[in-house]
Image (cartoon, rainbow, N blue to C red):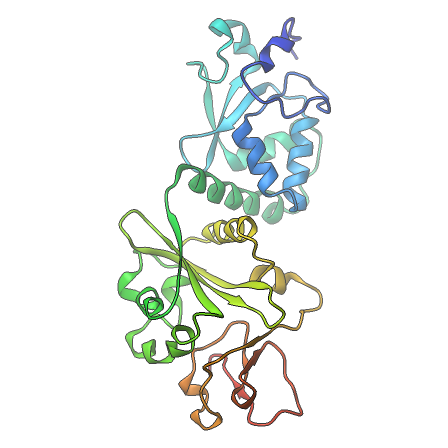
Length: 306
């Protein structure tokens, strides 16, 4: 590997990811990429990638996010001496690399083994795509309540695509009459929506206020899988204490409950309610929704798909 004579000067226009921990002091990445690592600091695979970069005996540096949502840009070590005025971050010699290939390269260059391609590469690529799109403002998040929730459940307002959103059982016109539970309890239930520049829906997730006062984000329905990560990022930044994605990953599912003002009556039957992902057990007499059974309470309704 080429030894740099003036590498200390290289750090003036960027953010040195490795200082003072990088094994090879020329390895440098941008503040934007540092923020990606920071926003996903609780994900062990992302932490391992960051460690791989720190310990990589690699032939690239000045790594930054790219113009496309699945690439990074970089400068080859053998181009350092050709850069004028130390402008390494905007040099004409910069190149692009797919983020997945970059991950594999960093593991190889740091002599680490990829033991799980899905978690160590594919899932991190999805996180990166979500972060990149959020950074450039490719979509907007809004929290809505009341009758407007019906609009964003309707398939007529969805962006073109597939995913869990366009396969949701609640997207049809015939299901609109079930949404009263959400629209009539704005103090406890709202809807987080992701919309594109054409005001079309890319994803949605219910937001609940639990009986203990904490906030909970229910299952996300999106057109693209990596947009689920965008919802998780939004939740983290907006004080959401718990999300559906976190709950289903837990060894023991926590007991969650919501007390509602408007919940109907026991004789309405499950067909009167929306299908639920989390709060599948309804106790109308107690004005209670839960994710667990309570055997001693009568007139329990099961609100899953049937």
